[in-house]
Length: 215
Image 1 (cartoon, helix red, strand yellow):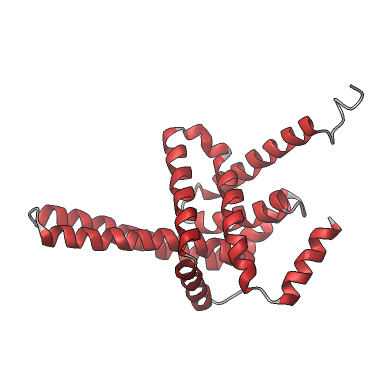
Image 2 (cartoon, rainbow, N blue to C red; image 1 turned 30 degrees about the vertical axis):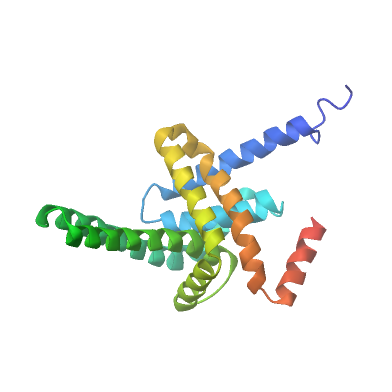
């Protein structure tokens, strides 16, 4: 009984972890309100969740805004790109539905646009975490993300199911927006970090291991 109110016991440690999830999710939600900043906010979400929540290094607030500022230009560029694709796909599907009668050609066009939408989802899942973890040009970010996406298709599908489920939960229960973003990033990091580490140099892996051991 003497340890029941100890800040390091299981109960209080669990409460602190829940509050951390809520705090990171709130920061993501707050910084995503302008909509155009969702890319940078998502990069910061993954970076902070992986570093602070998963590996227990650093503090939430400074790490979140450090990533948000440093990745803002690159993440926003990719986010605008995905927004444009989303708009094109939406209006193209609408035009095809209104102009073409039900049949093979209409279904072919719709399948093509839905396929493009799926590729965009794959891209979003990989690109923003990649930016959070590595420094690279836009071209290299795109090429490496596409390579990993296709080379690890089973994990890509798992990450997609996770992401779609998280969006669906938030759609059905809006209150989940205050904790689900960080939960999503934490679970996604389990999938993606196992991929990322395959392509990290031995020096980078050793450095990361030393950082984790010091904490």
